[in-house]
Amino acid sequence: MSVAAPAEERVSDKTDDAGPTTVNPLQRPDWDSLLAAHPQSTIFHESAWARVLGETYGHQPLYVVQFDGNRLAGLLPVMEVSSPLTGRRGVSLPFTDSCPALHAQGSEGRALYQEALATGRRRRWKYLECRGTDAAWEGSSPSLTFYSHVIDLQPGPDRLFNGFDGSVRRGVRKAQEAGLRVDFDTGMEAMRTFFALHCLTRRGHGLPPQPWRFFQSIQKHLLGSGRGFIATARLGEKPLAAAVFFWHGRQAIYKYGASDYRFQQLRPNNLLMWSAVRHCAERGLHSLSLGRTSLSNQGLRRFKLGLGSVEEKAQYAKYDFASKQFVTDVDRVEGWFNRVFARMPLPMLRLAGAMLYPHLS
Image 1 (cartoon, one colour):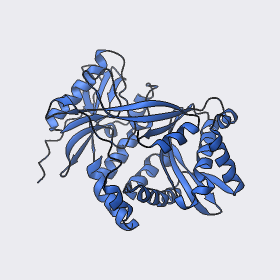
Image 2: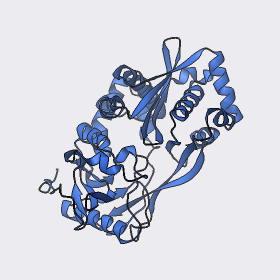
Image 3: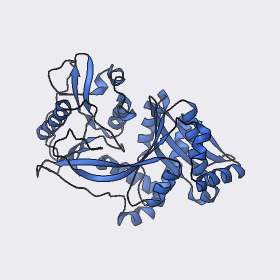
Image 4: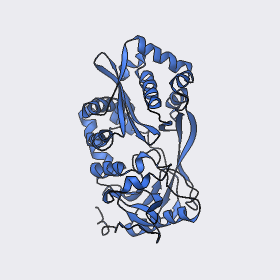
């Protein structure tokens, strides 16, 4: 039986330095311009990502902010996820690999986390999870650890290609010799092509895909407004692999990738990633983040390292309100459910994703 939600959280539209408060970025027409002052801001701090999550899943933005006059001095973006099956919690932010708080050193950062915890107590959250660790969150400890990989794009395309592992370069040449090409697009048809491959890939991994409406919203609010692109590797007119990339400022992010495993021997992913790296470098972007990788996925880790990336550890932190302490978590990418999902027909698998993901954010 579900528990009635607390009264709607008051969100402020004021701009002053009275202390941290919660705001809804979708109610601030100036939100993205306020972010421009923070060089560490990412596409996930923007209002468009909040709109995608709210439009798709109904999550409520409760972004903790600190203003200094008209300047955004600190930000901890939090979405309230409320589910009758999995409870109510704060996540910063759902479906992001990393979303660091933006603040200066010292008490300013601590105040953001204190306000987020106070909001969680008022809203009766089960926990507050942040996708990144921060010394300003006093007493925090890692709940999950992943690999993260970033490619420095500034050396330019020629040097970047020469920095790839030999097996990756050979794969690129093999794909080129087989006649594969890579197209770049931002439209809905390109997203449909990606989604069809995404469903195949997720079934191969024994996992349900995110619902189509999620990718529709991404195309509408991010790609359609110039915040990224879809790269598609094709043999003739047949799509073999596709990937969704975002960009913000001088940063690019590889967000989702998919391919038809039956054509793996043609190495479409090698050509796709090389083409995307070159595309981003030629646009003058400085870095390409390859997202997170589970510690158990050594194959994907090797592939990302083979692209000349620098590897670091990405850690999350999770505070449990019932026990009043930081807790550890489990990377739930593998389990008995993989065998079940891998055997589902694609229409049923898509239905499972549409039903499950609102509860799993």
